Image (tube, rainbow, N blue to C red; front, side):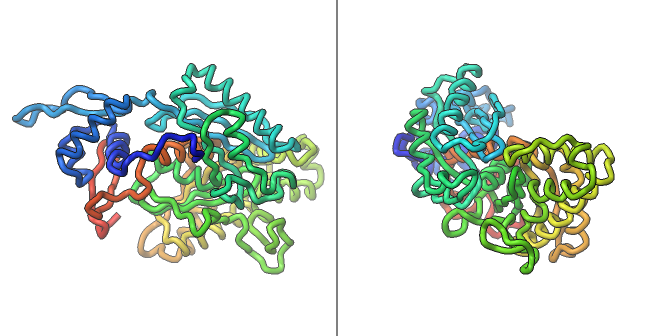
Length: 425
């Protein structure tokens, strides 16, 4: 985050706030049990959070024979964050509250052939409009989570890619968007954001290890284990779209050969559609690289409707995706694979069916445990919501989901409990 952001809160405050968020309603006594902190510490931390306007008392628990315990909950509308997913073809902007609930969203055209500064001015205008229409006070906005494709330099807030145009390479997008909006900006990978966002919205077992495969114009990935995202050395990890399926395949823009994107990604599927006599005309393709998502959606809709040519193209894409998912499960011993992003919105069920069948047939650890393939609960908005969630995490929640006594936190649907690190998932 920019230096304009609020100072990082003590770890104890982050632990307590995250436990209250996960539990929805929880007593101080339960916080002591779940956090490993002392009663006096919990009393002080809760008082600070109430004084800051982030937490409030919310009635009493049912009596168990003694004094009824006072319950605590977040003041969800006390703070907000903005998430922006941006690539050449699309831009989605969302606002979420402190509890991670969606408040407002809008979708606009992507960067196209605009310059970086022109694009960011466009994004800033739509952020302002969305905040105004939602009635959100800018003083309650913690910041903007801007997510896009990689590679990225998160320390400098720059994209290190020639896409969508060469002038984007090395452009200080974080500094520029902060100057335009006056808000702190956090940059991250779109697939990583989608993966951690799925954890926050309750789309996965919070104790599980899962991968998120994100497909918009391209294909990316993210892996989360027990609420912690795998980042590698520079947060440019799990780039599944650029893992080779054929060393003799076509040369990819990344420099590798036979990458997954070149077989399964929307541009590849569209290119194959142009080789099928009459298909592009029948589906009324629109010319131009910025129309990738539109044309892919037309193929997906036709496939779902039973068009044989379109269905063959989508099934071929799904088979390549399934092959790569098997590699992911072998590398990370996954419990689940979540499919997120605009390009899964229409024909996602075809991808789920193909990938589930292959993982059941050829997953390395299939005799030990199943790997479930599902669609994201956030769908096409997954990356934008994840970007907004990452701002919340940076401001209010601990980076390491462990108690001060070394035991890990596990979150359930109604309350949070602590389990030993060795406890089975």
